[in-house]
Length: 360
Image (cartoon, rainbow, N blue to C red):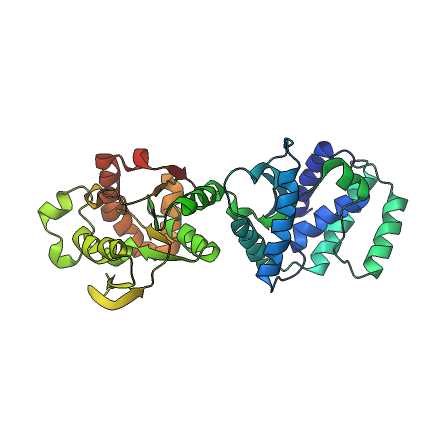
């Protein structure tokens, strides 16, 4: 049996234990969502947001929340994000809707895979893992297949008993969900929000910044573009904790530009060519993300409203860098760059100063 089936079986068993009034159609709906996420591409994001805002208001009006978890796994890299426990966290409906739209438009699903999951579900019922009989399931599935496997709604019993209110999103958003909450909370209070993402090489800093750029209308600035030029790599400079970055240029070009509160330009340094290869224009935006090692250097006088440190197990770090950069650069990371980074982390206690510590 494929691993995805084993995971799905566990999810169905867990869901049936949590929601014992689940009907056959509710189980099929879960299997459908595990394959097709939202079930269709969402071309009108604003219409989707309006529907979410209406549902958000209804959930908020219920008063005392139940004990539903924030996330419920669906298998297949998808999960349900329950609205009830997040209403008062401070995350914006627009952010939740963006996660839903991104997930719906990425996960296309496959009809043959879905049919295979339904066949596996039938066998689990025949094995007595669930209360529906083979004849009952055969009748339902025959009619369902004839309709072309459409999306289905929860049963009336399930809705009246459990009042489901959720959005299906990709599981990749779970590890950074608290970060999204913090960004949304701070966005309400600050005209300009500056977020630092520092941490170990290979921990996923660039991937996280890329993900945030898909969720928010923000600027992302990479510390790799301020790599220390060869001419500045003196013995004294490299002996300095955090010296392996052109922090003076970062201060004068980026931090000063952000402080002025208008569009500005900064240079992109290419370490393979050993020079600044272009000038990049950065438009004025409320949210600005500085990504990369040394972004929390104390010489910058802590300009950030939110600081994130990303950590990774050394073995996983090594494997990721080897896969990403190849054997030659992998050796340089291990012998040169990682020791310099670790010296910086230890000297300035970077992790201890972070508001959030994440592992992806």
